[in-house]
Image (cartoon, rainbow, N blue to C red):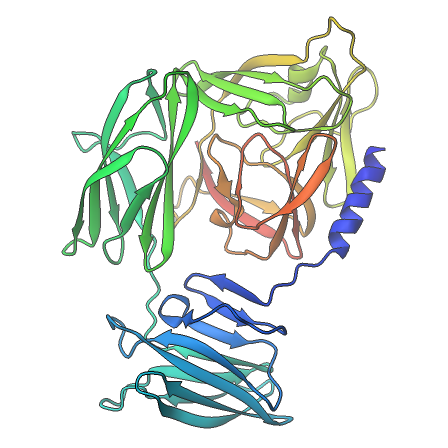
Length: 449
């Protein structure tokens, strides 16, 4: 039944295509597809380019763009860009200003595999081009020549002595916590947080930094609270995550459709874990957010328990792999980093317990940003095809944080193998498995402590 379920899911997921008439990625591009694009004004100061992947016919297609006449134009204006076909290999374009209403530029481009381009001078006072319009590989692109790639921000959470906090911060229930958030980039970032409050926010242009006082009141009960600090520069966001282990609870998964899982700190590097499975024979999604170690770690965790079978997936052979309770042969015996699993329990007696507990080593998963160091960086390769993936650690993170490729499809499955597609930018929660489909292999770059 497991093999039939997996094969049926993979067949359906492969057949179902994702089509979008435009894609927005800050600082990269906007693509216009084959259906009418009605998403409003395209801000080329934030996106840099807009590309017509599906070229219009003789009737043409107008779009609204916003761009400036210098890299630091404080008041970029809106324009109408119009593109229409002249013949099989030639297209005409025009650029018109809205206020005042006047023509800025007119030209034609040849379309084919070779590049053909022309430049637009919006500011006629100087001889510096503001836009480039070029054709290549049967596509036409409008590019803002003044675009500045926003930089990633460096973010720090520091105490009164300017010492950085670790990623896990232990708090007592109802404890008041105060710290300073500092962020630096190519210009002073704007700051926001998902919990707590920011006060005394100060931007320093001389150092391209922003500082703010952060305060947080711990809840009345023991729980894990994730602090997400977001620094934004020209629409580009950088995140820094911290976990408040209130009452020493550093991780808790309490969602319908998943086993309940809690990690409680013993010290800075180890925790007690408790996993409670639902009392059902249905498949239950499972992944370990921490490391229990050992070459026979599945036996260590589930040997002698009510867990009858554990499934995972081998991308190279496109086949499921399983571990079995008792003497039945196993395809694997150890949990692997970045692997996801599904668990099936045996038929339960009323007295059977579905709770498993033990001790594990905590793992702090961090993406590699900027220039990597020569030590400490690790890589993990997801082969092309379907991969059953989970992230270690205690912080939800998007797969895009670990790879430059965003051309993936993601699926999340709950109990009874109920699966649905989610956005490729969705943060992945440790303790949950995800199906990832990629046409080319992905190399994940990370540090794990």
